[in-house]
Image (cartoon, rainbow, N blue to C red; front, top):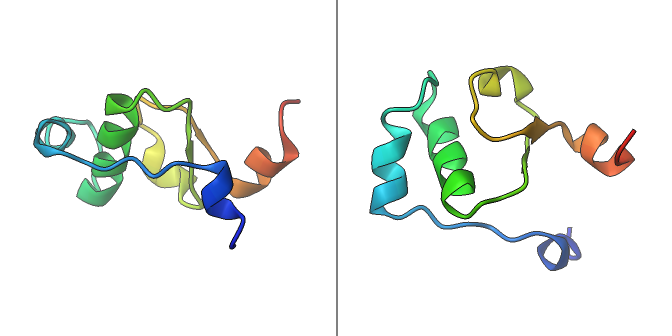
Length: 72
């Protein structure tokens, strides 16, 4: 876990991203905030254990296992 911050960036959510999150087609507002933040920061993807929550995500999502496995 100590090495994790060297390999990722955590994007903050500002007011514009928070407003966008309110209009995303997602049922969980916290997940919507993550997607809005990822879009605002032009993130390549989101890594999450809750893939089923991101079915309507506008950002690509991967499970931690798939992320660590790398490209197929």
